[in-house]
Image 1 (tube, helix red, strand yellow):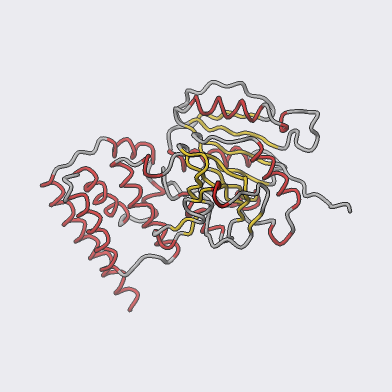
Image 2: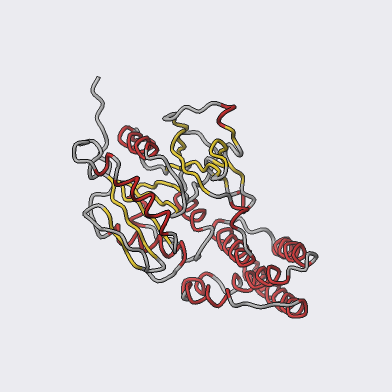
Length: 347
């Protein structure tokens, strides 16, 4: 029986910063694939690669299907946004894949995704496809298949699944997954959504969360559509505490997940206390600063130069006395802001 295929043309959006080894390896895999082989007519020319280099150092050979863009360091968020802007300049794309620069993959995973997109029915055609993340240091352990936000208390679909024990059927499609978004280690969106939606300037972290919540459609997951990537705990630094405190606050504010003011402040204090008892003054300071910057509002976030501000954050210094003064000032500011908001609402 003849089955009509959907026309599919994918733009692969990669943001990178000083990870040339990964980029060269992954680019070699992609260029050796069917997508670059004129004899494989079903695939040839159906994948364009857009590499946004925030370090402006990468040297690669460009061609009709491989595009290199030098960008100032606006973080992953700004890099992916620049990729979107370049993709929008060309016509004909049906889907956009957001993919981290430091993943490992098997090229067959791209074929599985492409084949699914050519056959997906109209009911599910406008849904994202979340790529599974397997652990870099144990290729048989799936860290997650997709994510549920839960106001920042993230739960992972099929968390820590050992595929040697559960079995794995590449190509099996799951439509009814209870998830809100897919991480940008690998996530595919319909181009119609990407054309109309920019990435918020978070610099790093939570941009994929917000984008998925904004899309509002549960992602599809497919066994075999996956990458290998380092897990979150191996990438944590004191500065990351700033982004992991600030950006979820903005996301929760946008989508109605912020708790009541007193509860929010208590959660903030609890996080500060955890670092305080360890004597980790720098991490504690970043948590204080994150709340202070959140109180400045979304317009402030969109107005600042994210790259310059990141450099400023990198130079931050702190001590116990400084933190004791700062957190009290920020708490006072927060109570004043939340009280004004509460009064406005009740009026």
